[in-house]
Image 1 (cartoon, rainbow, N blue to C red):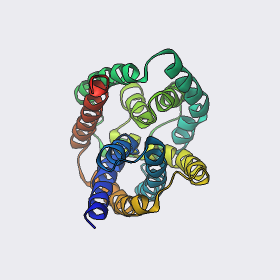
Image 2 (image 1 turned 90 degrees about the vertical axis):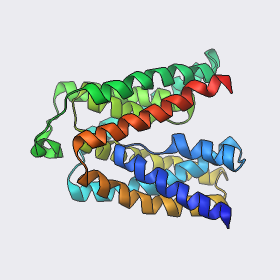
Image 3 (image 1 turned 135 degrees about the horizontal axis):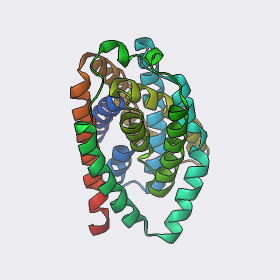
Image 4 (image 1 turned 90 degrees about the horizontal axis):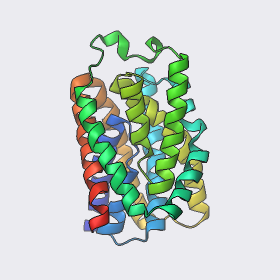
Length: 256
């Protein structure tokens, strides 16, 4: 019973924070299942993907009601995921994956600072998706983000959402209130397909997946609600803090 409660609360907390800032939560779900519950990485990844499928799908519904999603950008963020993931997986054959994680962690450390320092739109109307035009610049950087997020996911098994968020916030100057919703929508499209694959491979352990997913489902409703009611500045601080935590985890991987 203690394990189930722990999984439920962990799923709730991770999903709440992740959906607030446009991340899937896999970078937290997988180590939780591996380190705290001793599951093999393949099983942990399968459970994580299934949980994120519920989380991102339900959070997308909430964000759609708030009109925060830029659907065109969200779809563009998925276009080059597959080729990027293939290249990322290939890179692990050339470079030790632990040191790839270290390099990515250092990159995120810098990004966490830039997210706080970069000026952001203050007017409320700029926070809605219909105020953000699909220019050549937006298309170009969205495709770059799609490819790089695939590379990162292929290398590390998680963390692709951090690339999407970074490009939307820093390169496109998109408010976090919009980028987080758009990122969640983009992940919802790909997580479903990945979850089916893991189910077919037998990577889902119901005794662990059920309480984690149920907690995450509740969290996926709280995250978008909180995101709507906090300021853009506060949301950027939360995003920066989450990036900092992920960076710390990635940086210490080669040394443990």
